Image (cartoon, rainbow, N blue to C red; front, side, top):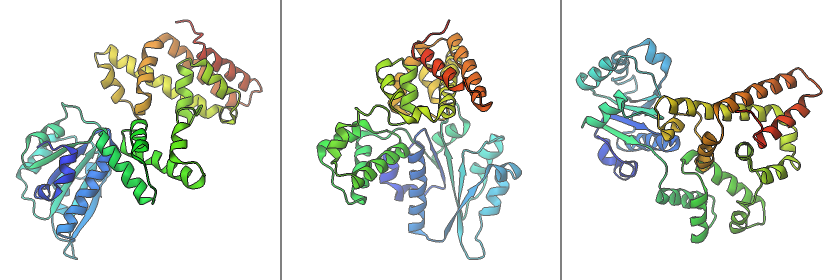
Length: 339
C-alpha cells in the first residue's frame, strides 16, 4: 500500500503491525528519517529488536530466502531483528517475491531503502499493490515540513526566529532534508559567532557573490560576465584551486551531455535530470535547464577536450598551465566555441 510520508510520520503506531516497508525517493534525508523513526517506534513496543544492515555482498552471496531464514529467529539473548536493505541490487525478483508472499515471518521486520525507483520498478510495484506492505515515497519537503524542521532546529539551538524570517528562510533554503539541515547548521554557526542578526544575514543572502563552487560554475556556464568578473579578480578561491575547478567544470558539462543524450533517446528533460548522480541542487535547476538549451553537443565536447588538456598541463607542471586555463575560462564565459 502507498502511504504518504506525513501520514506515515503521524500514524506509525498503526503501521508497525506490518512487517515489510519500502522507503524511496530523491529526498535521502526523509528516507533515513522514516527508517529511523520506524525503528524507534518498533522498539517502543518491544525493546528486544536489533538492527541488522544487510550489505550488497551478503545479499549476493546468500539468496533472499536464506538471509530471512537466518535472521528470522531469536538470538542467544532472546532478541529479534530488523533487517535493513539499502539500495541493494535484486537479481531474482521471482525468488524475492515468493519469499515475501510465502515465508511465515515470526521475529523479523524488513526495511528497504532506495533513492529513485521508476514506475516500472518491480519492487516498487509489488510494495504499492500488496496490502501487507507499506510503501512510502520520499519527495521534497513541503512548505509546512520545512517550517517545522527550521523551527525545531532553531529551538534545539536555543535560538528564536521571527515569523517573517521563518517565511524568508523557508523560501530560500533547500527542499531536500539533508541539504536543508546542512544549510541551517551553517546559519547557526554564523549567528553564534557574529553579532549580526538573522535578518541581517538574510539581507546579505542574495548579495553574496559566490557562496560555493557550485554557484561559481553555474554563473560561469551561464555567461554571467558581470557577477563572474567580480569573483574572478577578487577571490583566492579561484586562483589557488584550478584543478578542483577543472574537475567541477568537467563534471558539470558531462551532466549536460548526459541529459542531452537521454532526451535524444526519448526521455523527458525532467526525468533525465532526475537520473543524474549526484543530483542537481534544487535552487540551480532552472539555470541547469537553461544550460541544456544554451550549449550544443559540439561545444560541450570541445570544452571537455580543452579541460582535459588544461588538467594535464597542471599535472605536468607547465609554467603556461595557469594562463591557458584562464584563457579557457574566458572562452567559456564568452561561449567562444565553434558549434
